[in-house]
Image 1 (cartoon, helix red, strand yellow):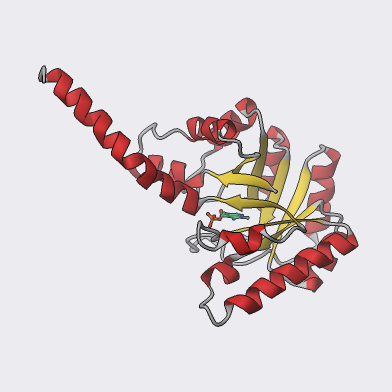
Image 2 (cartoon, protein in one colour):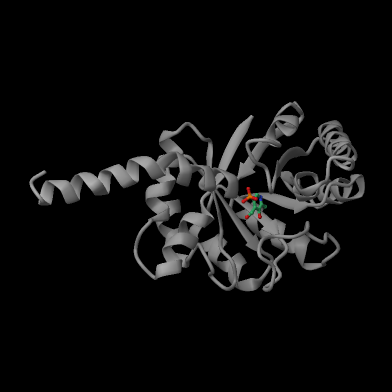
Length: 238
Ligand code: PXP
């Protein structure tokens, strides 16, 4: 199973102070050296985390695949066609949402044309969809290379509903395989809930961001504090 690491929240931290660090490009290099298969970044219309220059630098320097998540707008399509990531994942975008809340609506007339334009440039297209058989059939008809099943409902489910959400994801992953469209998944996956999803053999790839970045803070906090204390002590000749 491939792992794409979504590094948007490195940019969130940087932008919170308007500083130049932490650098998403440095994070991308760590994603590469850690054995993950892909760097995932989401360029939002409001540029709340990843900025245009991050997209350019990461695509230019990455040694592993870059998956660029974008809304289906002329601006985003033009940026993706210009910089040519390996994969584009089309997502719905609502300005007020904290994160991508639902899957893409597949009935827009523009979608087929958009997918064709990416294919002409050898960019493979994934559609971020709510798990449903109908959405998978439509994605196949649109000739998308991948679907990414939105695991948000599964991740946020209370324990009485989780089995139903998980069964739906399993059913969708199996159906994707049967009709020949590659199935990825992501959103809200964390160290506790990922196992059920990772056990579904029909899923090709997971894209995980928030939980990995959050865990990194705690795994790294102690060494970061010790590093600062060491510098201070050195200055005081301790
Ligand atoms: N996949 C898609 C299409 C997303 O939009 C996101 C969030 O940007 C993710 C995966 C990663 O979600 P999370 O940050 O909750 O792991």
